[in-house]
Image (cartoon, rainbow, N blue to C red; front, side):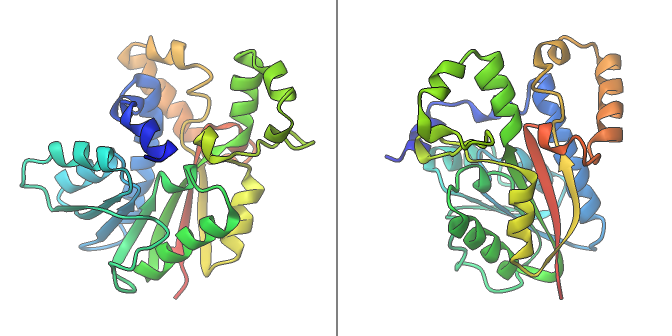
Length: 262
């Protein structure tokens, strides 16, 4: 069993997006997914790395045709257990690095909302993006989620009091405080320039780079205690600022919205 499988086998992945502060990321991602979907009449959606189906199932229940591909068997089992058979969704095991099960140009929208969290080399990241480009129609959209470097430095290293541990492990940080992730750390952490470099190597045009959770994780305790009115106002503020490029790198998660040239 891989480290990734061990991690997800012992984790309640659903709960991450269901807390009030976790819903900031979910609501923001869905907002931009719907903006892309609105450009098509009967869009076909592929989600690669669908996890336990938080996004795929919600979109299928809205009536969209969805194909959900998930690497981890446990996650796929949980996803399938939620279905009642009426949803227009196909769920299957697969790998972001090899989408050969699908012909070129099969989908209008391809979502990679998890794979880039767990790909550690530029070669693998480009392979995943290249496969997404191949299976997406020219003029279609690719939405890619990333975990960002700076929140980990701030929250884990300093707020979590792990400074000495990190400094004593020479392999974890570059001189400019960029985390050097490995499979044992589970998550790959990037900066905005890393994302831009990947995009530049493929026939893609960036539409937007969005901070999907902004300050939500820094203020998780406060946000989880907000009443409905205050939380709605927080979301108004978040939506008003989540595209500000001066704030992007401080968000725990970002969403890169790309259009396939054609």
